[in-house]
Amino acid sequence: MSFSVLNANPALVLFDTGATYSFITRSYAEQNNIPISSMKRPMVVASPGREINTSSICSRVGIKISGVEFSAKLIVIDSMDIDIILGMDTLEKWGVKIDCAQRTVHLAASDGQEVGICASSPLGYLHQMEARPTDGIRIVCDYPDVFPDELPGMPPDRDIEFLIELLRGTAPIAMRQYRIATVEQDEVKKNIDELLAKGFIRRSSSPWSFPVLLVEKKDTDVKKMCVDYRALNKVTIKNKYSLPRIDDLFDQLQGACVFSKIDLRSGYHQLKIRPSDIPKTAFTTKYGFNVLRSHQCSCLFHAIDEFSIYGLFRIVVVFIDDILIYSKTEAEHEEHLRLFLQRLREHKLYAKFSKCEFWIDEVRFLGHIVSKGEIAVDPSNVSTVTNWKVPEIPKEVRGFLGLAGYYRRFIENFSRIAKPMTSLLEKDAEFRWTNAQQAAFDELKKRLTTAPVLTLPDQQKKFIVYCDASRDGLGCVLMQEGKVIAYASQQLRKHEVNYPTHDLELAAVVHALKIWRHYLFGQRCEIYTYHKSLKYIFTQNELNMRQ
Image (cartoon, rainbow, N blue to C red; front, side, top):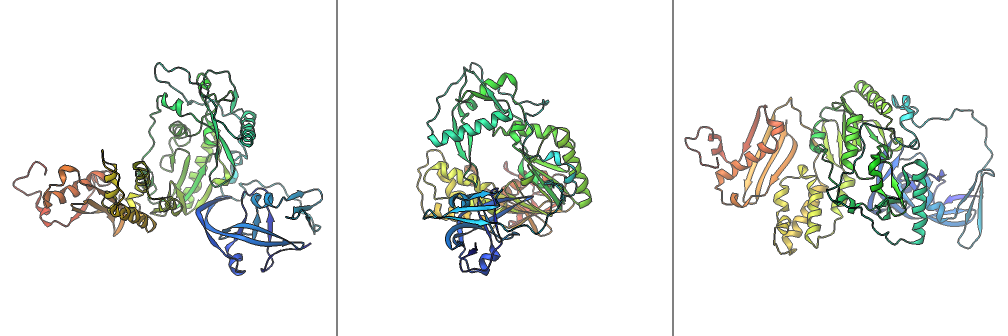
């Protein structure tokens, strides 16, 4: 038997039934002149302890096995210990059957011929204890129980339960099931059997009922059963436990050099629903949830906030189920990581090891990349904006501006650039996509792809504020030691359009002081403006009502 890549050097190949996709190292592809092309959208590959971003693929790689040619689509990875990994997408396509007892692999050729691969005899045997996935990682190896392969079952009773409080006068809602394909029905049954075995759902004869549907998981072909609770959400009193401001979370990381990122395993399934509210979660198969349903963000954040980070707010930041432990030194991080993992153990909260990252100096968090004293836009998130199609209705304009606006602190004069697009969202405005809107649309995409790396603010250093104003809007920049911390901008309101230049420049200063008050209050700072006469504002004999 022979196994080789066509027109290439010998390769180390792994048949991996645990991998969803198939991969090839960039170095092997380039050394053997295998064509590499760009993917339609970037992909994040989960690897033990980290995530790998890739946007390249080898579409048709010829592989010859015992004289029979096969082809595979391989995703390009920059670094990997093995030249080629053949995952389930390729193994299913080739009809691969692995016989562990006989140490053979059988493949079905296109003409029906079966090709076999037989493993060579082992040269020797090693007697070794089974390794835990956490072995070798400082501190983490002391907490293997915090990183189980699966949740151990129903979560324990906690002080916080998920409540479904209804608007007064609400009657039970029973909706008909959506029509789903026969093959999807098998997938729904499989999902239900898994949830039932874990105790996350139970049989129900509730008068409430909501339809189920299947949704593909991100970056995979695996489908997950979801329940359409939109009708229930409309009659539910919203949980008002407030989520933190994302900018405040990033400011908290100033001075941090070492990070660990924790991802809870099925975080929503680690909190129970109040028993009296379980009937309200029934879905059309007559089961109801015993644990928290997906996307109940405020309740999950409340639970994690209460159990995991109470008293640890100076070493941990949490946004829903995204958890980041940060420290200024490795010695500090050792203590901080131990404190947090001990807290998870005490409250029987569990993390997914394969999605966690430990002892890193740069981390992806909430769509940003954070490192020592710096913050940048995550390129994998920017691709969503840059691939956005030209909006055809106001809703699509609002969606684009909302996503791009998430990174507005990185874009100088964001409001001025976006003005032609925001004008389409005004009440009774006619939707006409002209060259002005297209130019603004393209410019925002361009600015995001070239967004600068910003500095995290340091309260021990002096702040510098630069302000400017024009008939197109107000703009300002916050800096320290010549490095940009944030940009801010605002379109002029109707009454500001008629301001004289002096008052317009003053409005830019006021805008900067308002939005950055939490940085500047009680601090000495310098403010620079293009209007020199503003330096006399404090000694003016007379001020108008605006001043």
